[in-house]
Image 1 (cartoon, helix red, strand yellow):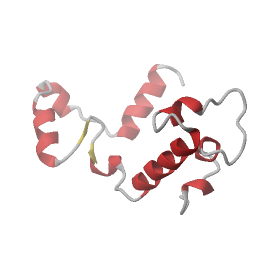
Image 2 (tube, helix red, strand yellow; image 1 turned 60 degrees about the horizontal axis):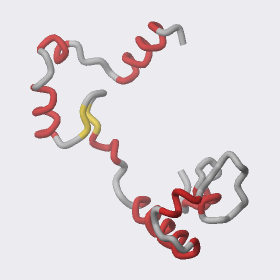
Image 3 (cartoon, helix red, strand yellow; image 1 turned 90 degrees about the vertical axis):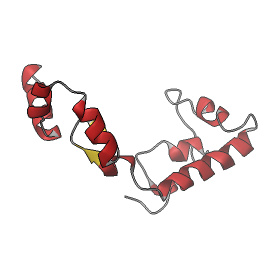
Length: 106
C-alpha cells in the first residue's frame, strides 16, 4: 500500500497523469477522455477522481462468501434465491480456487 497514488509503481496512474511517457501498448487517451476533452483538465479531474476513491472503504470489505457482495439483508435475499443444494455447498474462495485449478489442471 502507498500513501499517494503517484507512488504506486504497479499501477498505470503515473502514466495516465503524464509522469512518464507510455509505450505503444498503453493508451491513456481513452481513460482521460472520460474526464474532459482538454488533456490538462482531464488529468486534473482524473487525479481528483482517484484521490476521492483512495479514502473510501474498499468495495470488497463487505464481501460475504464467494457469491454475494453487500449488506447482510441483501446477501440473505440473494442467497435465498439459490437452489437449496447450492446453499448447502458454499465454498470458501480458497477452496473454489483450488477446485477450479484442479479441474482445469492449472
